[in-house]
Length: 264
Image (cartoon, rainbow, N blue to C red):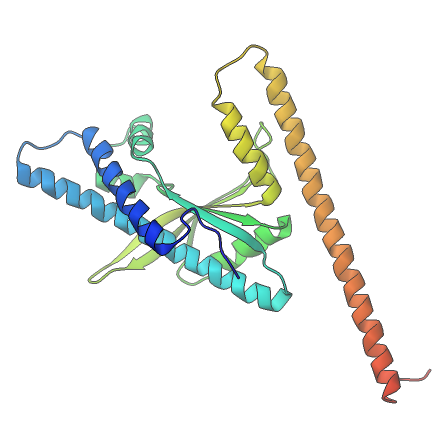
């Protein structure tokens, strides 16, 4: 079984993560009011690095939980409900801008207390019912605290966006402490992810006239994709039913051949 992540190997993952943390450190520090004392500046940089490390650890914890569930279900149901998983730590400018929009202090403590989506995981599933099955199993775990649920599948956004969003809080154990950290988990199908990715790219294109027509077409595509998801699930159910019927017929033949079948 192979999981596809944004970073393809541990070596590349560590290299990119360190580079990203250095970049984040520079950008966030440039947007903060820094102390004049060099020792205090160094302390601020070290504190930022620690916060980033903690959120990356929280992501690894949740990824591991999802991998275990996927492995178990692949054996139990003979298929993987999770197609792939990606993750990210929010960009520094986005962190600062969100704190400013919400009127919160720009500090590391404020980040940890007021932002729920600094660490984010996206889980791509095969079918719609897989989304809810994975979410339920994740929520039931003893060390997972559910903070918030937003079901954009049952209640799509006005633009047609569909996905299940969970904010969860998990304990992360370090050498001398335990810290509860929040992670946003977005769970969607391949089709939903396809639409959301393209819609996101198109949304940031230069504003053009008659955008209402384009928005209407995008929403129509979202409806078509949702209908495709439903049809694919129906096809899967029919295939599984036929497979069970074949197994029952084979079992019946075997029992009759062994003289164990019942005669009416």
